[in-house]
Amino acid sequence: MKTGLFGGSFNPPHLGHLRAAEFFARAYALDRVLVIPAAAPPLKAAPAGASNADRLALCRRTFPAGPFDVCDWELRRPGPSYTIDTLRQARALWPEDRLFLLVGEDQRAQFRQWKDWREILGLAQLAALPRSGQGLSGFVPLEISSTQIRRMLAAGEDASRYLSPSALKYILERKLYGSGGLP
Image 1 (cartoon, helix red, strand yellow):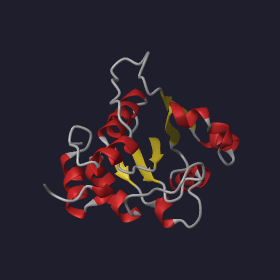
Image 2: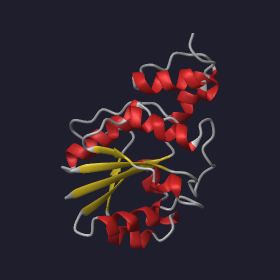
Image 3: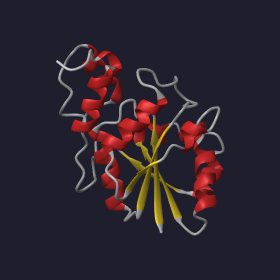
Image 4: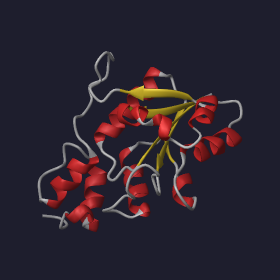
């Protein structure tokens, strides 16, 4: 089987993340894609605006079951969320699978700063998606970031075109990201 690992802060997960994960699943004919929210990303500030449980719930509302399996491995593990630890865990569970590490171009640019990056390349094929989508047939990126969505929600702006309806409802009900709740 072919297994993709798609990690991130997902604070919040948005339709751009979903579009990228769907592209990876098609382009690499993946049998499953693990969507893995990070608890404590080592190369950037800890996620703010939503708890780990909220981000996990939001991922489950954004990525449909099927090829996507939202995974809480990094949220349950203490300390920094190192990709190498997650890949080792996947390899232990599925020793025969071909693993793909699915990243955006911004993450690929800093890949050599990652812990045990050489070992990562021995465990998984690195698959990077350019933010512009340039040169990729069948992929049109959604030009948005989680940071922009958090700002929109805090300002009371409509972010519905960037979030799944179920995720947006969850955010508004719980007043995450300064959304102030339902209008």
